Picture 1 (cartoon, helix red, strand yellow):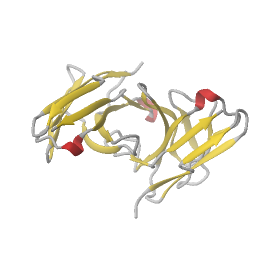
Picture 2 (cartoon, chains in turn green, blue):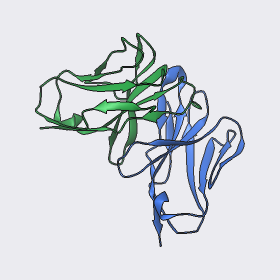
Picture 3 (cartoon, chains in turn yellow, red):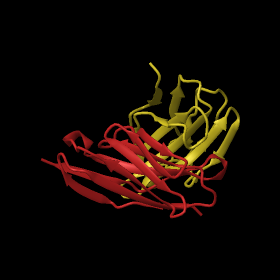
Picture 4 (spheres, rainbow over the protein chains, first blue to last red):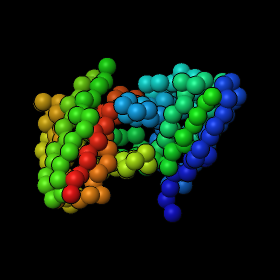
Length: 114
Length: 109
């Protein structure tokens, strides 16, 4: 089944403890991206990648890191999480980066930082 | 910069027609997309307009006017399951994707 898989679905952690949210797609998509969703703010792009070893900042990259060493994987790393990073996170991928190329989203990761 | 505006909430009754508007401001336009999201679940792609006019997909249609920097999503024969949030999105230069803040549609019996 074609899908984007994020793990974990739920994560509670403490301030400053490094964490990684994994994202994997099995559709051979070139474009991958991370978003955070907060009430009233919609989906805001954190980082995106147009292909292997090509990553770029979205609108809210501060406090996050990403890497794209393989086409299928695009992990999101929080080196030192803070409470303002408590949010619902989505990974998404598309065949290419044209806007008409539909984004396929993972099921989300709900992160709580205390 | 890039920005999109949509109404925060819309309410309609089952069987009716509802229109969700989206106005955008971008430096370079690469098309307008629409996504649906149920209760914090994964957003799903609905439609895409690159050129002016109406695109129809079943009960859903999407319209674009590039000269007015405006688009809308039209939902016909509303069903209870259409209660969800709807997001418009535009692609900014270099692959960045900007979403609107979302419109929550409540369908009432």
